Image (cartoon, rainbow, N blue to C red; front, side, top):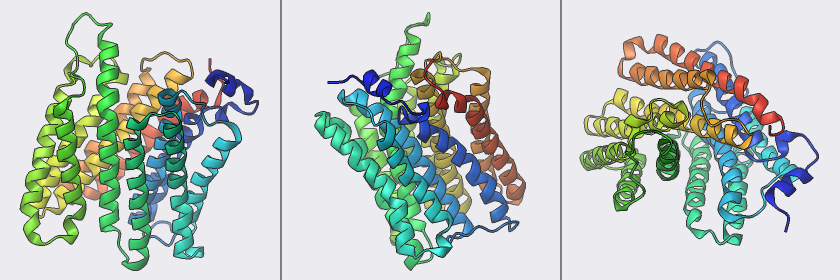
Length: 399
């Protein structure tokens, strides 16, 4: 049987289509930038777009169900061959899958001209195709334990389906948006529990001190279980009776404390000299922060705390963790050194700052308009730096 490298060398087309992370990471970076560049003036009434969605719904959909699935695809198409020993998806198969992602962006972007069912079908097709492809490869490789990640991808697809149904029949997307965020945070909790202690251990083994992260244990399993319950309650809270607010708040607070202790067990204080490592811990730190803010919001019905929790999870955890994964994987798979350049560190700091400013904007509504613009500018700067520094790596052959 042909090896992975033989399969990649057999592709004679552009390097962009020689491995799954290349087109999807590059397009994710570009799309994260473009969505904010378009959304902020649209939200402020300066421009209009030919989408049937309201500006806020479009913003949520294209980051949660456009940007995030692209990063997931790049990650899975790179990781699954390592998990299973099977050949990667390259060439025309990769182009076909990527075309489904582009189709979804076009369908949502020009949805004013399409029936709602067609927009939804075109949009959800990519995640379903990705889940089917990953499931087939994992089962063929008898790597069954990684099916849990596909289950979470399928939950994200279910949330996207619900998003389109809510938008069409209810005119709002409260439940599906929450469910989509919950699925993404749970996915990062699962994957982060593997890569953060692993990458931290690999780096610390070359350092003079000997403190190592705790590896996966029953505590991690309990943390994931409590977090899953907390996220489920949080997702359903708008549809539940008022009496559920207090117990949901308690579970959310407990999940936040458990997630915080989980992060401490990975010794983030020993990672300060390598940005490729500390950024993983910084991204994960927004998870317990989001849980604690969400618990406060549930108990006191605080809109500001709710918005702060949402952006701790989305701008903080999702935005920063996906960048951390994309930069590290890109460097490793293109033959570049696994150490952060000054430009890489700068883009991390830009996204951290964007997330923190956005959280503060939610908590200080009187200053929200100015802080929203600052946060958007920092977000665009971070992803512009990613595209500038990592675009050439993603489009050129491995060094």
